[in-house]
Image 1: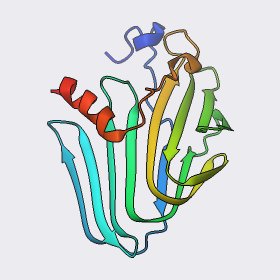
Image 2: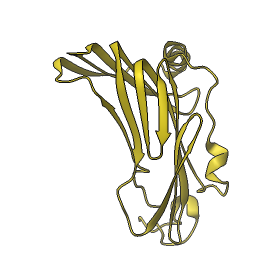
Image 3: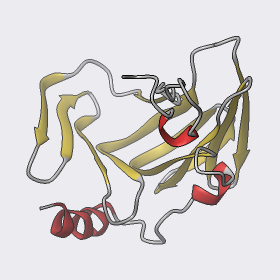
Length: 184
């Protein structure tokens, strides 16, 4: 049953592999969290974390946009501080990884031996300053950070880069409202 025609690949008796592309880590210098809450709104697709720390109230929100075809994450904090963002992947001898950086963020390109190629890209928009040294970004003196995350593959015969599209809008609330109207 699973052998079939191989999903997208169309190769007999081949099941297309499903693996995580990588891990996106967001670390704050906020200190110990108190009054920690997490929620997931199934009516809108919004995941949210809130807590109180030495940095005051911290709020993290995330959704995967059905209108802009990318994930959008937002971190706000009451007082300015440091936020470290990293895009990594567990080492796998079957997968070659290359980390890149540009003025807007990070990307990670990978290819499986005799298999699929992929790319993950993260763009950053902040009220602080950031320094990129792939696979990490140090954001300093920030009270706000917006991340747009995109993943592309060559599974349909096009280069992963061709799927790296991001909305021009950089306001989380505007992006979320546009998504929420269509999500329902």
